[in-house]
Image 1: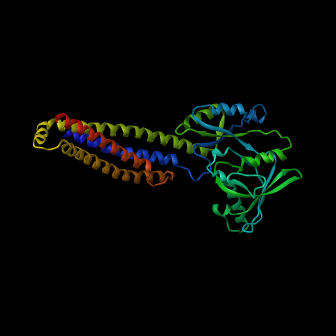
Image 2: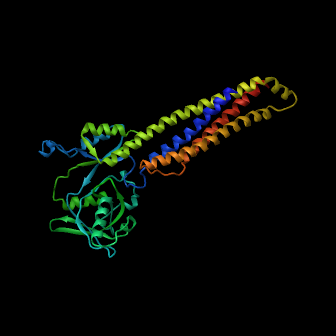
Image 3: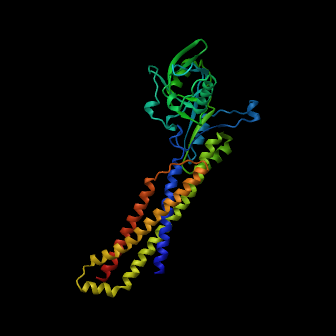
Length: 380
């Protein structure tokens, strides 16, 4: 009986931490998605500016060879240049909903694989009606500050996407106006992002042979290996926005923690399941006389197998239900703890954690059935 109690306790704790670790591992990896137009685990980096670079002794731009070296690291999923404009760009509002606003702007383009935006919205041809653009949120703050100073109601994200805007691109007296529309926002990029086709069009037509320099690159790190990305940045003298670094570091640390808990939980569930199955075998061997007697009286072995199978499946089912209940208690406190720390993750359940629970139950049920069958037919 002591063996059964230890196995039940181990299975209970293992199931609880198994669901909890998988649930929060998924939620931590989803943290930030949907609120940022950049893809997951993506940062924009540039070289640190030092006294030698100020004096022109060292370069702050990247060569294609440097980018390829960074990309060759196993923990880097991808690395691509951030292309900037070599021509003049003016941005202006063109809508009766807002006052006329015009300013010089700096535009950039990145590989669309780094953006969490539908490709059908991120395309442009010279004959298109408008240019899609991703606006930095700080630009929207500046626009709302301007409107507030003019005693005009400020505008929300959704409303900005409905406002007609325009770009003036060119060089010197050679200019052209193009309609534009905001399709998304970003907190991580300080410039307006436009499709690569527009940048090629402008640079080819208006750059007047100016040298194109790559001063920033976009890096996508592999899941759970952000520490290696930081080491690479330190080694190569690169820097990024603090907000990007904090989120990446947080996801890496918390993800690693829950992976450790997940590993321990799987071991605990596996060992507890083995102990329960061993207890079943011990129970069958201790009741060999009763089993043989029932068979002589006409009981079919399948009925006896069913008895043992249902008994242990019920035990594991009760343990699973109790573990699932404790998971909700832990979830309440952990969600509150994350929220207090400023990490607002989705509080809904995850299919992965429920699926793991069902899988563990099915595997134990199959193992119980085959062991009961083996033990009974041994005496048949």
